Image (cartoon, rainbow, N blue to C red; front, side, top):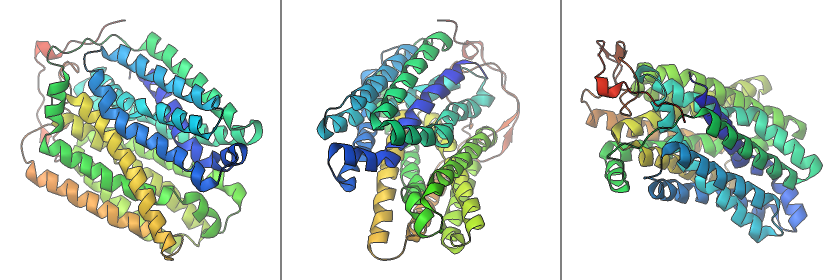
Amino acid sequence: MPLALLALAVSAFGIGTTEFVMMGLLPNVADDLGTSVPTAGYLVSAYAIGVVLGAPLLTGLGSRIPRKRMLLLLMAVFTVGNLASALAPDFGWLLAGRFLAGLPHGAFFGVGAVVAARLVAENRQARAVATMFLGLTVANIIGVPAATLLGQHLGWRATFLVVAAIGLGAMAALARLVPRIPLEAHQDVRRELRALGDRQVLLGLLTAVFGFAGVFAVYSYLSAMTTKAMGFGESSVTLVLALFGIGMTAGALAAGPLTDRALRPTLYGSLGALAVVLAAFPLTVHVQWAALVMVVLLGAVGFMTTTPLQMLVMNKAKDAPTLASASNHSAFNLANAGGAWLGGVAIAAGWGWTSPALVGAVLAVIGLATAVTAGFLDRGPTKASRVVAGAGPARPAQADEDGHRTPPVAAHPATTTRATGS
């Protein structure tokens, strides 16, 4: 794997840290700015809205910008957004800073996934994309707990100053390590929009919304479940969140090679396992060791869905994958908001603190049904690793999206060009 993937992973680490750290800092922000915790929760929503709107908007506006330069511009917006959050004089300005920090999120991962796929041979593209996402999972193990601890001791502004510094470091790494990748001659926003309208792309996005909503129905209330259902003290919340992050990392590591081998079976298996884990969660939550195991499993099977979903929409968008890839992160953030809302409705209805897990299981089943339906509608010979033109040399025998092996294919000379230095 090329070093350029390290620069993408560092960027993902910064993005993951700022996305999730606000959940742990809400009481500190509310006390400092003289507002309530529920009102401060709008800061989480502001970031998510920024992601949903920014992914298609910034990707479309940057469709004619070379991808390395686009990555640098997006990370610059991210850095400015976090710096603005750190220096915000009141709640309104902090809300604006969070929205600005969220704007480049989806576009960065959309462009970054395409760049990652372009850097390696076709039979290793899913592993390359998963490597970039490792930065996001490691952020939940190290970045979020450390940033939360920093904010609790030095103030929440210090947290966003550190994240802004990570953004600057990520920009330096991108500038130094990512090669210049020229624009394809056919790349334009109209072609990207047409690709986004493909039925398989839309079904993939719908699968992401329902399937990943099952994860966030529980994750959004995991801190409360730790103390109110599992019987742990407040000091254990950081440990439980870190265990979830460890599971996410394990899932990301497993998803890459499995997706390269058989895309749709990996997607079906991860969504099915997610539904089972969520359904079993309320049965084990009162036994502390079993509850901790289930937290790890939830993170693992939940995040195993991200790489096959990312590769699916990129494959089905054919030679205009960037907007579809970015829109996938809009779908993930819609899942974030929708899952949290439905989980909250279940709790408010008096169904208990573990009821969001059952809601999540239903959502995961809907996501699985959507994915299986898409698979039946798409029985063609499309290969799982066919993503971006110019992705590398001849590929060995590999599996198609349904897991069937195909013979070795010699690459056409036009498809073996590798991106060269910047």
